[in-house]
Image (tube, rainbow, N blue to C red; front, side):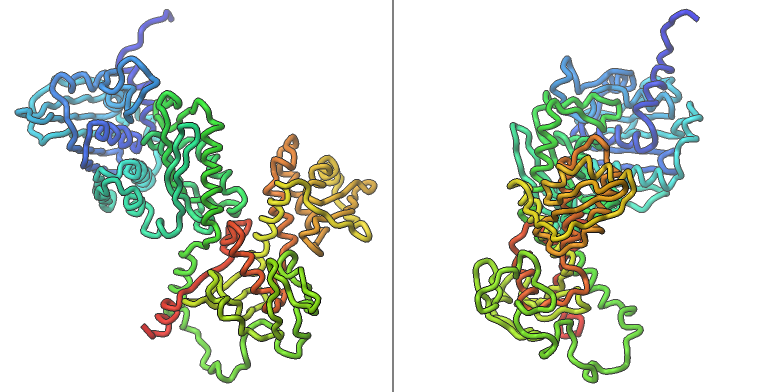
Length: 612
């Protein structure tokens, strides 16, 4: 077959394969056109998941007869002249309308301001009808029916009506966040109506419409700049996370994008604060000179390429981590709300015991007087490493240079001034794992293991930034039997592990000898620590050094070096832990993203007992 020019309809259908993947792609292209036309109100209606009908009505500038005739021709656009390095509109390729018209039945009706009437043009399978007058208000109405009727093979790859409807909703939500000054209404027989009134320049109010009213209380604001690249937005507290990445929104110069570079940077910023399989919440606006970003990567325009991707990645990671450091000692208030709601639910009281608390002894996990002495220095479990580890000559614990008065075991009365601290004064320990503290306006429940794990982790990161982590020599080396492959991996990384204070070497075939451990971990489970490290290293790229996995290694070590559940603490130890949490960034969640404490306000407690 000789080389020949393809027919225009076939060219458009080929282009449609890239531009129009599913009904949500149609909605995206049409809504972007409406926004570029200056619309302040956009109505979208769908049927059968967008396969039977997509209708978009806007109140934008509209098109006259000449422009309307050109709009359905390929590569005709009002948004681009000669240059690709100064794109300031959402659309610019001039492919969307002819591509849609080549695979569906497309009707455009448009009326510019002060025009006597509207005009209408239609395409069906790429074949256009003559332009004709029509009745319509100012703006443009686009109807797309029978999507992919001209290319029926594409219909087989579409999902159920419900799935396609959900995809359309997500597209509208993303665009709505980007343009809070525009009102969006999404309706149809296959969905409940979604109405998002305009919020002007109030981005947070629009985000609350889309992501819920709890967004503001569970997020931290961002405002950063690096080398003429600006970053603004809101990121969620690590304890407020999701099971997927759908709550991550990124906008580049106002354009909604789903760029892998940006999503990777968000994930890296939360690398040491989220559990595996959980995703952070983030809404980011990136602004920069259009010449520094290429939006012409793919016809769908969801990906972008930055001239300096390292700069943008560093800005995102640095700004998010700085924000989490500044406000990361907060735990998500949603946990406290959920706890209060659980108490209020009828199920919480459905199986309540009929016996009175008055017939039981005192409650609380702290040992009672006579169960083992009264001074922290004589505690059967030594004080937490790094918190009550320094004692005066009289045996009183020294916390941050101050000598606290001694207290008898079991006494929960403390200095009233401690209640003024954010985490209050420790009152008791329950189930040998949870510290209950009293503040001036409520109470705080702390998970001692999760909290101490985070504190050890932060201390280890600080030590690593200052140089080698201090280690302690074991009186007798710990010999650990491992698989030969695990021994080889650990031996290859012995020099890196030594920087963490873990000194080990091969001990014949199938064994590792541990000679030193990080001193800040105290009397840790060496065997469990080394086995966990061996398992983690086995999952990593063999070429990556442990320095590239610094936070993962430090997190594993911190977990093994923190105070365990089931350990009884005396009041000095509990208060020391609370004070250190208040001084440590990110202490609101453990290394795995779980909350370290929950706070209940006195007003909420009183509501539980109908006192308010």
